[in-house]
Length: 187
Ligand SMILES: [Ca+2]
Image 1 (cartoon, rainbow, N blue to C red):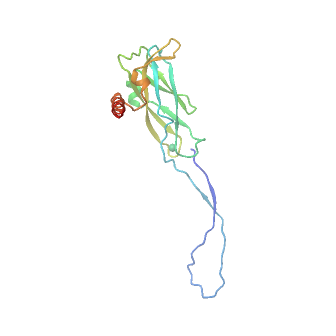
Image 2: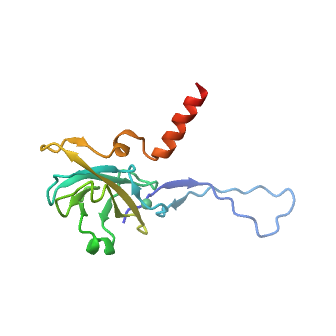
Image 3: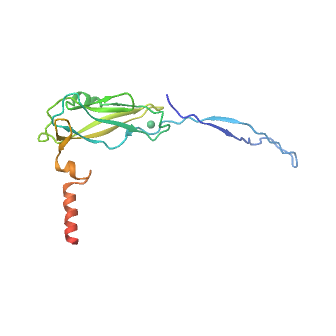
């Protein structure tokens, strides 16, 4: 169980509950009160960045194709630990990829088969359940994007689909054509 502990010194002025005659001497007292602040875990962890990676067509079974980690808006950042796993349904049904938790706040995407082909499927989405060690613990599900690419025998990237390589994330071919048309019209 990890939580933030903070110690504060407060001045307490209790309200007088008894009648005090006018011109009576003012009585004050200072009392040090220790307040134990327990930071409740408010935010679920999330993927450290939006991971978009690739798997080579010549990738082998059991290959770690991408390492990833998580972040959390709760404090303390340094003391938090995260665990990673596939959702239950995906663990059984997914024949392509799985998640391996390395136990050090990082995990990897691991191939469960070989023979990936762009012609068969260009892109895969892999869900991952991330859990923090806060109190109470929180979980969230992120999505990792994996494109199938052609690679050299040493695993270096050779070719992906044109959209995967040359277009920024989120910019579709249609949007790009529209932008180009606007430029042409303006010229
Ligand atoms: Ca959290």
